Image 1 (spheres, rainbow, N blue to C red):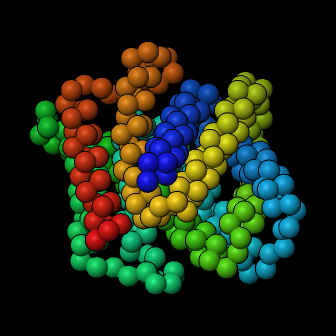
Image 2 (cartoon, rainbow, N blue to C red; image 1 turned 90 degrees about the horizontal axis):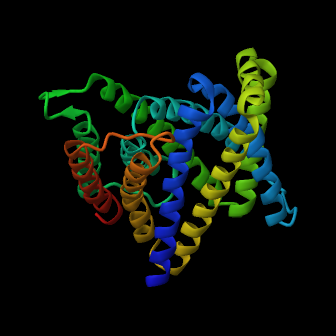
Length: 309
């Protein structure tokens, strides 16, 4: 049991690092938080490179049925839309806040999975878990010193609720396709369809082309390099999590990963704020940190009820 837990902790750490890289990309690496340039990089370049890597992983055995490809193409559109709003949320608020609100994904997956996946059911304890996560997210918007809800953070909450819903649908569709296909082949087609979504945006929407060109002239190598590193980290974390799930309970490994990630994100955020404030600055007042810890603990309880209720 120790080895899979260690693997999941490493995976959660890599996921947390990718969250902070995302924050740096949208707030520092591109001018005026231009998410259009980042979307082109994330789709055309990152999607293309990852598709190439997985074509080797699959030994070029890439046969896939047309309905599943079309489903993954739709999924890539969903992923792109969710990523756009995720970047906008990161530009508005601290990385830790955004990642805690990401726990909404589990709530939406709980509610939607029974309609798509086999053998998925909901019980009252799981609903209580979903309610706890929702309350934790709302709690983050409350300012105890002013005794009122922060309007700006409420907007962040609304954005992240939409992002989480969209990502939840993406995850469910991905799992649905994986039920009938090899994981690596599915990952290849997920990335190649994402690549074509990027090509469409670049070819037919002028604002995306202009943003990408400006980014290339101003800070191209750094943005592209960081984005590719981010995709590698994300993929590596996914592989570690999947491998850990073959050695122990998949539900337990998922719970450990999801529960730990916000804590690691917050610790990294505090360290970066204290040591490298030019890279990223989070709110690290005592009140804010305590509020985040309380929200994360409530989320962990909620996740536990959803996974094991």
